[in-house]
Length: 163
Image 1 (spheres, rainbow, N blue to C red):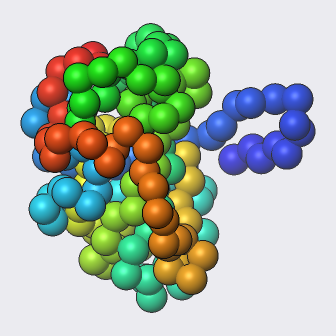
Image 2: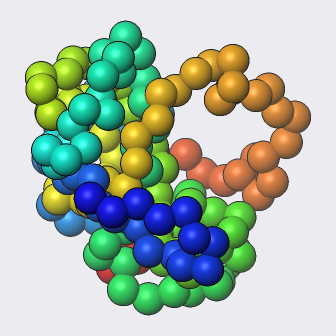
Image 3: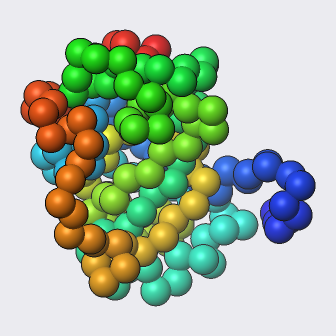
């Protein structure tokens, strides 16, 4: 296990793997909020397992992970809920300059180094970079506008456009 806080580097160490029922992009929920309780598990590698202490008291956790199957960066994308090309930073598309994803999943239980979770929206075998507790006081904000999403359709599963 190596940890570096050197700001001149941008290397991240994988701490585990997310296992889900989704093996391809098409049909995968586009966000945890619309995943309908899809179940998965997160296996945290042994050198990091001690860091799971006290996590079992939280209803939700943030999984920060790598879009490991996103092969290209695109600055303009047509997001799943739209038919118009948008800037990638106004979307949650996986083809980002730094292919990092986040999902607030439900934590069902902790068994040693395995987290049982629901509302998974990532592909099977996705590498985990970090885990953080979801804290409503810090993580929930009331908003008045959500940009182009105000007029978007309500699709809830991905198609194959970001392979």
